[in-house]
Length: 166
Image (cartoon, rainbow, N blue to C red; front, side):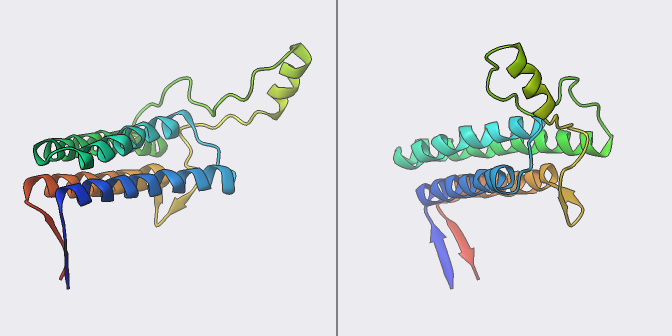
């Protein structure tokens, strides 16, 4: 059975996949307590750009939907590059940012609050992978997901539609 997606449906599929990926990152962060580092947070930005872009692309005429799909492919190639850089930092291939640490909490009201907050703040290094599955960290998985989404968007932009299945 073959499922044929239009360009609009493909754009919306990219939006859903991007939302699921960000949702997964948020589950790791808020559900399992993995604190993201600076590079982890930066890697989310292409997804935040892609989601509204994909919705807008799906709502526009076909010429602009195709252009939107090409833009989505480009956004996810950038995302793959960011993930590859972060994975390289984790493996020691690249030097990470000097200010790489976790997010800052709420602002302290006074010096006592600030000192208390410093004792409870957990700084996260970009050089250590907090979690790995099949040898890949979350940054490595982001590379694979981003490349898949870029290829999917590009394939949808090239053809009249996208055939899925056998």
